[in-house]
Amino acid sequence: MSTDGTSVRVFTSGIWQLSSVVLESAGECLIVDPAFFPRELDDLRAHVDERGRAVAVAFTHVHWDHVVGWQTFPEAEVVGSEALARAIAEDGDGEARRNLEKAGAFDREWYVERASPLCWPKAMRALGDGDEVKVGTTTVQALALPGHSADGVGLVIEEARVLIVGDHLSPCEIPFVDDLAAYRATLAKLMHTLAWIDDVIPGHGRRLTRDEALTIAKEDLAYLDALAQAVEKKSFAGANDMTLPRGDPAIMGPRHRENCVAVGLA
Ligand SMILES: [Zn+2]
Image 1: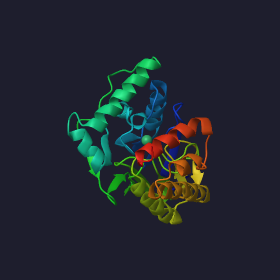
Image 2: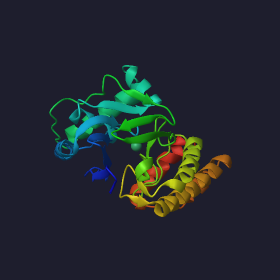
Image 3: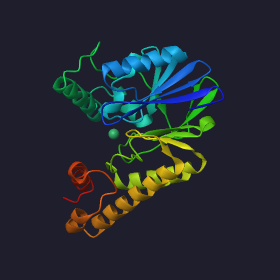
Image 4: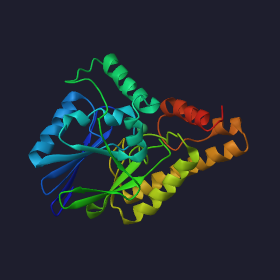
């Protein structure tokens, strides 16, 4: 889509329908979660070169499928949440290092060859809640979204009424929970933000209208509320019987059980 001089294009990767987003304004480009396979990254590079120059790469969070492509844009500043900037700066930090190892293991398993070895950027600009990134004549605002991961950050492109939400509000998957209370608060925050948004880009799956995103937010919150109730009652049986908001039970069932472990129900 494009509104006066601002264009927002989504590229969907072959890995879990991961969304990479290119925002272009006045010849400057922000690339969000550039991913994943080398030929997909070549396509992203070609698109950016056609539109202008890459000024920033943003990570929505630390997870490995979202962070491997930044080296395709070595000239761009890398931005992400304060927690992620800290994790990267502390060399050898557990979460950042583990994610790089997982990406490497995936590449080995699927014979993915890359021009240079996977690594984190040397420096990254930390975005606190409400901080802004200038791209051409447009301003993008950071939204702290912990819950799926402690370092989650969403991006609001106010001019285009677009919201990029990382691994929340996905039409493909149930919520994958790191911190239950934080995730529920994040969904409440997203529902509030959606009031002035037309177009939602989830980290996995197709773009959503506001109403579709609101429906998913409500379903996900109902699921997490039920999970919280099961925790309160220490009801292992209740957690097992829970209806999942979406997805193939054979695929999402094990993820639900991981959620149960994460919240102490196992
Ligand atoms: Zn994730």
